[in-house]
Image (cartoon, rainbow, N blue to C red; front, side, top):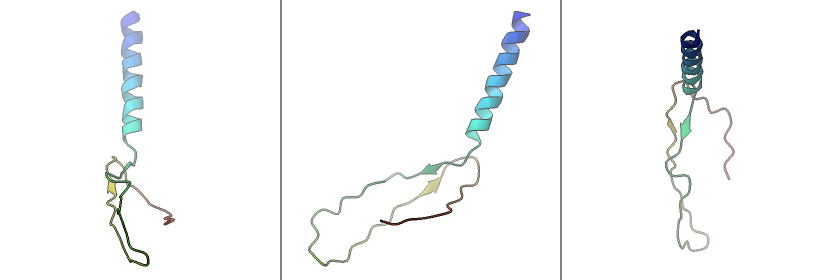
Length: 66
């Protein structure tokens, strides 16, 4: 009886882990950038790379810059 309970518990744990890992995940390797000294009224820019590293489709529904 203990073997069946242990096996059932292992199956439930495995199923729960599979459900958690099958999710979208956003990875931002560089979330902060230091421009250093910038003269007043200068125009500067920097590109941030966003990667979808999860197992499901990642949907970006709204972006608020600032």
